[in-house]
Image (cartoon, rainbow over the protein chains, first blue to last red):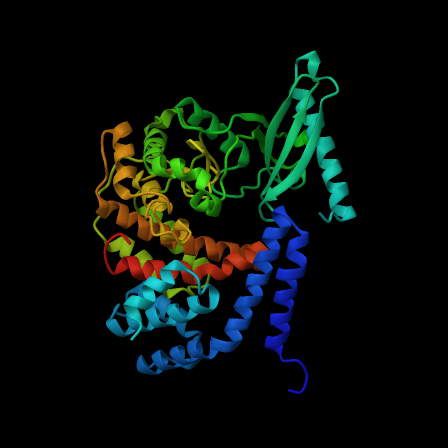
Amino acid sequence: MSGTESAELLAAVRQFLREEVLPELDGFKAYTTRVAANALGIVAREMEMGADLAELDKQIASALNLDAQAGPVMRQIALALRDGTMDEDQRILEYLKQRTLHACAIDNPKYSGLHQARSRWVR
Amino acid sequence: MIVETRTGTLVEAMAEGLQVALLSAEKAASANGARIASLTRLSGGANMETWSFDWVKASDIEPLILRRSPGEARDFEHTVGELMLKDEAALIDVAGRYGVPVPAVRLVLRPEHALGQGYIMSRERGEALPFRLLADDCYRDAREGLAFQCGQTLGRIHKIPLEALPVGLSDHSGELLFKRAQDMLDAHGNLAPVLQLGLNWLRDRPRREVPRTLVHGDFRNGNLLVDEAGLVAVLDWELAHLGNPVQDLGYLCANVWRFGSPKPVGGFGDYADLLAGYKSVTGIAPPLADIHYWQVHAALSWGMVCLRMLEMYRNGEDSSLERAAVGRRLSEAEIDLLLLMEGDCV
């Protein structure tokens, strides 16, 4: 790409919201503007790290012999857990922990639970 | 402050509507010429608004809050949370009579007021913003006694006799709790296996059945109005229902409502103080294992709230940015569920 990268545009809009718009506002609009800037942060992090999630899904699908045509991996696992057709074994638990660590790192890297989870589950 | 013309007109029309509604309820001649001042939107999504304003009379100024769900008269029966707003107002009234600190309900909106569904209540002084409450020096003393006060207050809420409660509270006791949760996960396309894991854990774990009581359902840091001396009022009763009282205790201790603070009770207190306060009113203190059980439930509930917000955003019920953003906080609930299912209270 020869022009401004998407990640750069996101960073620029985020900075604009935080540094130029936010100081002009108060109350509900200031709060919502902060939410808007955070949302752009999520998109930026997903662009950077989202492939890790897809990779984890691919690995578990192959380990459990899931049918790629049968819908999203997450749904197949959720339904199997609901119906009791899949044991809550270590492999699935481990996948869900690693996937949730990655997802939370994208969604809210400052979340207190994430720090605790990392100290317990990061290999 | 930037005010768009459209917003300005909306605020003017609303002030006029509020004036008519309040005047219709005033009997004293001194209310003649009373007017609305300082009307400001405080928070909320597109279908639940909180507004602050003053009712200025010749003799005094009354600080008030409007909580409303805007909409046409035909939407009047539409329920936003568990309770319709008029039932929420009735419940707050009852809670106040049983010694629970609550705002005074001033007026319940009727269709002819054309302001939507909602009610007007007293605006008590104090702070409900979690970050201020947890960080500001002026709340140091308040924080010290708050867990005990929360225990006392929850004790009072749970002691309200069932026959004193308004009708129409939904029942979440026993198996109904699991059925509701499973229906919700199914309705959202079963895309969250960690929530399913949490629900299985709750369903399969032995639990102590206790007589059902009123459950506030959203008793947490953020819905507690606090001043320098301590708890002033319990807000946001829209999720109230009948169920297991320990649910409220576990919910108050949920990680998501500690706002990053290491203190387990709402980010401001310790389990022992909460339970001592509860015992001082009810004579019993549930074991920590029960609190842990309901912490798992609180994490699952938060996950389901995220799914519900996402649904509201997607189906156009409430297409606000706030709803879209909360829908993305699902992974917080999942982290907490996975942590809690590994062991004891976190």
